[in-house]
Length: 131
Image (cartoon, rainbow, N blue to C red; front, side, top):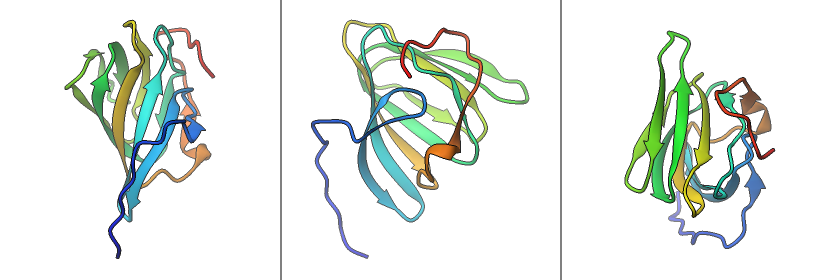
């Protein structure tokens, strides 16, 4: 195993299935880390991950995240710098940037993101503005 170091890329690497910009950071065998950004006033598509779980930490901006599990547990949480949220496997979620600046967060995905087929589009509480 070797040490890796990576600086946040200036441009996004990919667009996530939910429509947010993704800057890929680092990965190890059991998890990966990425920076997510959603422009001010934008709303993501609602998605459900088939197998991965995620932890997000909000760096900047303001917003909201809706989460719903099959039990059913459902909540909308305010996103602002310093807030962290969990997204267990199978959870439906959607987020939106409500402030004047982009909503930016670092997310850790466990296991590492397996590819585009991992996320499926689902119904959410808000009309998506990105795709």
